[in-house]
Image (cartoon, rainbow over all chains, first blue to last red; front, side):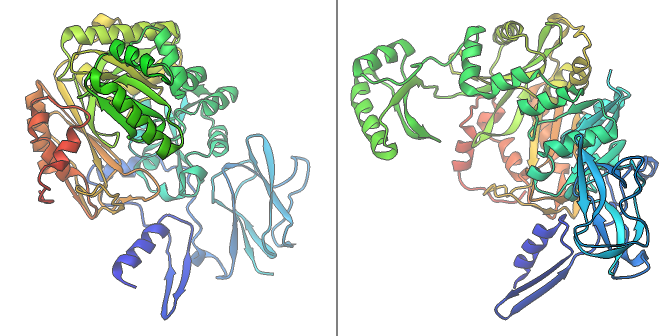
Length: 152
Length: 453
């Protein structure tokens, strides 16, 4: 493994959702842990700092830092696409899942509506709901965390 | 007028649209892939939504995600920029069916011009001159001789099944025609399994001249003069200028007039660009039409003083053109250089982290870019990092200004084509304005450059 190869691997991973890569090739072993996206640019030549500061904060969700969570083994369920988030099947129905409740793999957690289609989002693994991160009826982005679970 | 525009694009053109919208008092929604979350177009928009992972197919070309983003953000119009979905007629239709404004020409216009054969037919009917040649395959020698004489020598024989420069023969004299036709046809048969040949006028020194069209929804059309885009490598434009050193006032007036008449006939709307091939004799021929705003639109803005993006938005909202052809005058001279993240010698892409960045400035220098120090040029998207546009009173002054500005341009951490541009700006055929679409080839064939500088 030379520097060029490592640089190429890093270039490919940059900006993807990959957080960890284990790579083995004969004797060579490489483990990469990718952090959160780099902090917003601070050294802009073209943009005066004051202008940056005055910008309205975009309605962009700050990824919930795992460090801030109560438990390190907690995990999030993220939105697979951009759309509108609903916690229940209709306004009259109770939420699909309540805080504290344990869900099974494949259980419906919520609906994300995109282009008039109601897409049921299912649990990919069992867990106990710690927190619902999005208000019912709010827009969500691709990859935005919707729920925080702990293993159950 | 629209209240909130969603921009279905990224990088410098997304920022360009934000600037125009903001000056019109319109809010903007940026959409972006996960890779572009910290991009300037996302930071400068009023709102932003992540629509997918880095590959374009799953983000910037993801129609359901973009329409969904428009819905949840409450946008009332979509601007597609250039590239990506800008010339996708189905997308334009879906946008309109969703009740949103489409900032571009009608889907039927996009569809017509997107099909090369249909576009040529329609533009022939609308009165645009076409490169003389056989309309279809020529099967007989006698027919070929008759056509070649009508077209005028030199002619080019093209294999119907060929492409990319293969299976072509240039014939300069009538008495070579029969022999070369037999050879070419036999070669084509051997190479492609099909010996069918076309014949066309051969242009030795073709220039790529395009006319900027601006049209409203009510049938009014004007042109904003021409752009010369002959500095190309493998059909990729590298530098554009306006006005063209190859046009005089009479030719400009004539090209503009036939272009506007054709657009009136097909009832074209919004902005668009008609590309012509101009030969050594001053004859010009329709090549194709781009039904979107173009990368090189700033050179036209610089010489007309009119913001084309604002025009595009307000015309899409149904406003009247409110300009006469007489009111459009080209003043001074503008040159745009595309600064790409690529090796200046091999032209291989050079994505990566920009470790130092300083854009040039001063009178008559404009840089459209989202680059900055610590900006990462991503391997997922095209390699253009910036557009540098210089404007001056005359062409020689604009060339001097471009050279001066490039001296100030600092981009470190990645390779760029700035050294190539420095050579080009000193290359005699370019400096004299006597160049064509093959000039870059000749420049590159000259003694290989000392890569520095």
